[in-house]
Length: 165
Image (cartoon, rainbow, N blue to C red; front, side):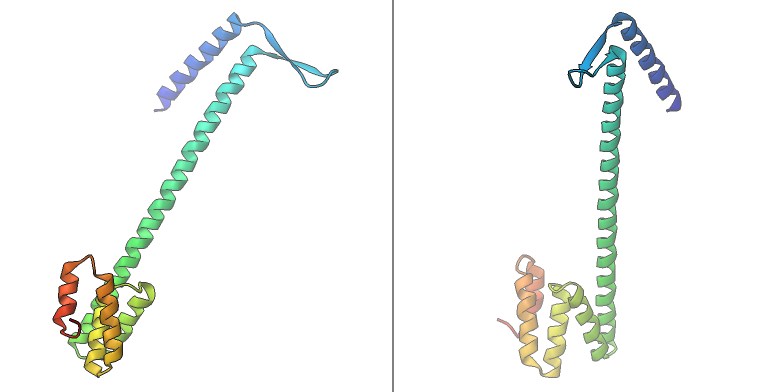
């Protein structure tokens, strides 16, 4: 890659030298009535090339920063989803061992991070039903059903609880 850049640099230098030979003229820039500057054509060409290279470099840099940002957001979201899945699994394990209060805390933690998590809503509804707190149970089942409208399997699971027709 370095050799290719070196060859391109040599070709560019040769082209600029050739343009300087063909265009020995200068351009006069009048800044005021009394101040003017004469700039050789080669300097203007070099400045244009450098400016173009700088703009391309800035564009590449910004694209790299954008990619890093999107990758970081994606990794963060994946990590959050993994954490939520672990909390749901933890709650389910507590349910299996009949540690309902610990299970409830796990599912409530899931809902504090993701309020529309259907599994946590459904499991909390089941826990509240077992405790006899039917108002909270129905509330959680209704929320779960509302969020699960697009997923027929989830709706079927909720309806199997026979609390909501």
